[in-house]
Length: 212
Image (tube, rainbow, N blue to C red):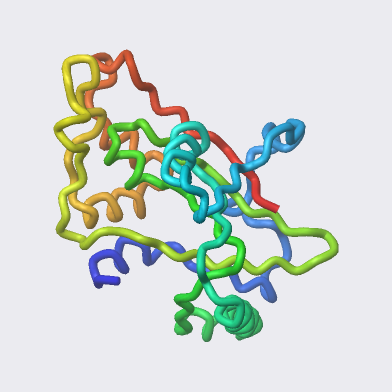
């Protein structure tokens, strides 16, 4: 991570759970979303399925998040990643800031995110999501990010742009997007959006998902 991005995100400090006594506002979730019945499940896609690419496209358009199986990650690597993650969480707060973990879990949850929302001109959803703890079992989550070089300009291919589908967002470099995201969080995409009065065919409505 470059020094510029580090400065932009420097105000995001991991909590030292041993020192807090009340639940911080920064980690609360709108309670109005907690009482809806879970009638649907996040799509699960087998990467060995001949139709995997089409299923991923459909899940990206309808959900903005999906799970994949048969991803080819060895079980011993998954177990080692969990072992290292548990060791990280058990460290004192000041040492956690110096530890780096770049491995993946067995269950792969893929969030489409802002990049894959902007590239297809808003066709794929970027999902607002959270992970909640289980009252009986420990939860270990390791996030792995896939992104372009910082100087790459993000904009949809010209074949996706026409009179009925004008560009929804201003072209920005990945570095510029990370800076805006680090400052404005979930408002970042709205701030980069072009004049919405010209866009009647696509409205960004991020979906909310809870992972257990």
